[in-house]
Image (tube, rainbow, N blue to C red; front, side, top):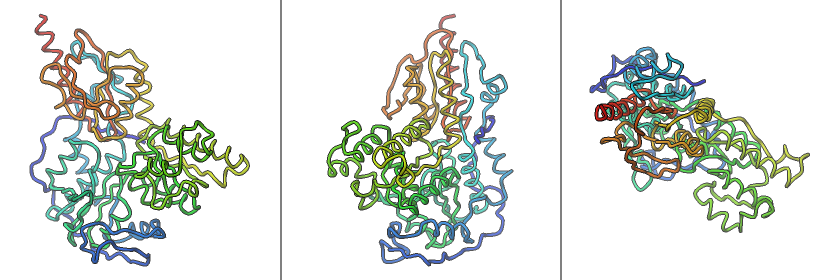
Length: 464
């Protein structure tokens, strides 16, 4: 179930410290009944440890979540931290829209707000627990393995609270900066198994804000692994969430879209689907960054299961699942499908609700769409995609700073191209559809709308 915070303007706190800490959480040295292979000579190695293919990630995670140096439920400061977040991230403009059926007119600008938008439950939970961590540990060093969410406003707020990113050198995270007694936050997207193992070995306090919907996908690929099914993951191979999900899988291949799924299925059928696939060598070259170690398409596509990055387009994930199921039926017979295909529903409710609301929004009469969300946000990119595919002028921005000077906007298209446009707001009365990604605070949307109102107010004064 998705929730949105209701907003007002805020003043950012300059002091990292929140109210007084409770007692320190004890440190627990993780048991090591499982076989692992370290990439360095000691626990202080800068890179994360690597794990063998037979490493039982599920058992390790089970033990980790029950250790004394692990927390995923907060520290008893929920009411106070939520009150702080409300002051920082909520909006009077959004509240006015919600109080008036998601539509309101300011001057000659009518704004229509999508029925589902903005902060989802998983994001709100992750940010709130991160705030609690700083309150609980006001003086300790706090690190985070990736951005907590894909929103620059929230990430900057954590920087102000002195939550530091794990440094990266030559593409590898340098965990040697983390000392015993430090606190490390795992973001809403989760963290890969090797990173969790490295942190557990270091005896740090782990604060896990992983979205439960992401954990649900991990459970699915673990079931694939147990049944010796290869996981076909609908996602982006470089996205933090998909990297984490793949680390819990056995054999896997990551497909970004329907075209890549079609290529895989055509290969399974020996080129008899649409002829898009080619040789084994070309297959491995095409997916060289998106398959598990030692992946062999001639062996590892005999039994397959479907999983997804939770922020992908719901309809495309479902379409890929149906395509793979039909492919395995055609290859092995309907009567044998359960021996070759496995699927669980891992589509995130919040992602689905926002996409459904966007499909409904683009059916309305609009002059343009304003999509607000981080430029590295996968779920926001798909909201932009829905508008573009309907032919509606749509502008995806990550903050109000992309608007101006004057009637100019810098925005991104669904595939990430950065575009600048002059006179993006038409003259005269206009109707704007507005939505925001699941990591976007209402305050960020408000700031963007204020810029729109200012441009239209200046236009009215010039015409007066």
